[in-house]
Length: 477
Image 1 (cartoon, rainbow, N blue to C red):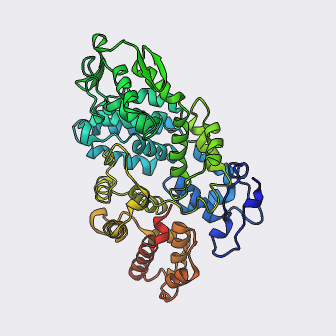
Image 2: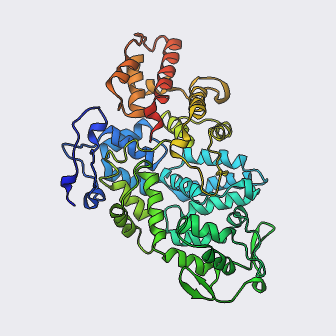
Image 3: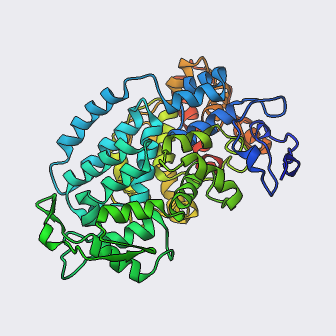
């Protein structure tokens, strides 16, 4: 294949003109090369917003402006390895988690995690922690222990941008995972296949990539593990130390051996790559094997997640039409995008409840497959719910107590008329990338109200912000 397979689109709209329009087939040699701005595709506000939606939870105006000034590669450097003292921040936040984890409920933990997502100096780390939360899909509905759930998410965060190998090895010994899988006990006389089934079908190879015999033999390898009083305990006399045949390999295997066999299977890195492709690039475009192979090579035998994420974020394909607005924001992304953009802090206890009502109840993935996501986030009821949440956040009173103030932010950035403030909101939330008719419809007919008419100015700017965050474009990441 050659780059002749790629076609550039004619400029149509303010932001999207800077994204390469791609036709099939896609040349992998072009796709994964780091994006370099050029005359046809200069670095733009739209691309900076796209990067922050995917690698973080949105951006505020100063972050967008700094990204514009720094360019893509330096901005990605900062997202991958921020200069702030991230360990110190996490240690402080862990203390809040510790105090919130004293009951069977995870309600307080949800609020503290949202708070961490809002304040973190390393948003990519929290975005990847959320990815793994969905990937392993451990739910307190089954664990019923706040402390174990706290420890589980802390484990995900610890390895979020590290190697998948030690993460998976730790996961199979995590009491929350075993309880969630219904694997609190597994005796030699009665092997429990809950964890081995999930390990092979959900965490590694994928569905229908092994047979029932493989799962039964793997269950024998995991015998002797018990969760007693919230802790993992091994009882050697209950372990089946006979020979097992798993995925074509024979030996006196333990559970750790099964993990190693699964990690060494060629299906596992490909499945993980496809999951991360969907998370960072597109949930509408399934990559062909030719596109997957270079990412598998980037992941490598060490399963270096940071390296793979970096390859994706820096790539030509990431800054192309294949990726741009090709994901639907989850409820968390939808809400935190507003909060980050408007530089606000809200009651995360209330926010956690509202997000649960929209279908994303943190610490409670609905099934072992996690949240389905994609178009499943949007239906008539959930769209009305999103709009209601936007109203609650922006209305200036009620459950969130007026914590968000778009008027004040506009004035802080020297936008002192409703026209300039509304344009600012367009740039801030969707980087002014709208069809001309929609954009003009928002701006035309605004009253010539200056900041001297405080009440009207406040109400109009709030309504303008609400009109923007309820547009279809804002629901897309």
